[in-house]
Length: 151
Ligand code: FES
Image 1 (spheres, rainbow, N blue to C red):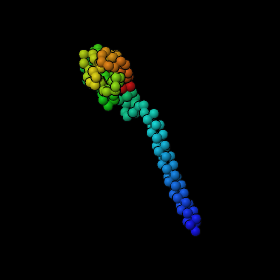
Image 2: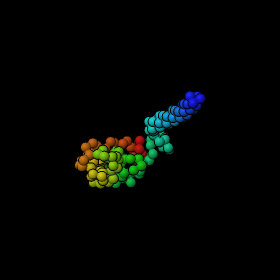
Image 3: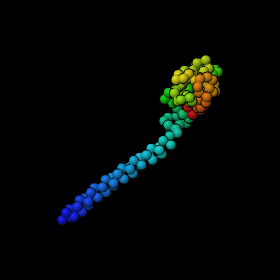
Image 4: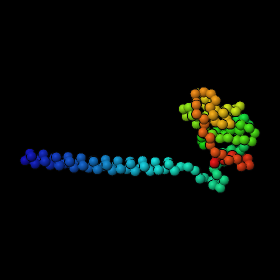
């Protein structure tokens, strides 16, 4: 008699374990599906496609906004636009190549990162001082009339 009770008890326990196992597997499958969807989505983000389809990317600024010998940092786009010579506009990533802070100030032909004072040439993005040793990567812009667009 007691053997039968033990057998039932074991059966019950097995059933519970199996149910939990199935739920766990389902949860794992769901998690995996979500993860792979995220990876696929992030890999295809190249162009925002909001407006400006005909003429490249969105308008960043007017040429008059960028001071000669200086520049402007566009935090949302993570880009810094400079005007090293009158009428000549350059753009670089605003992410410092030292430890990833956003560069902040552009003046007298120099882009400066506030975190550890790395400096970069506003015409080329090359490091000119501080701990950064790699140049700021160039970003493509187009100037049409008095509009500067991110390509
Ligand atoms: S992160 Fe820019 S100087 Fe260190």
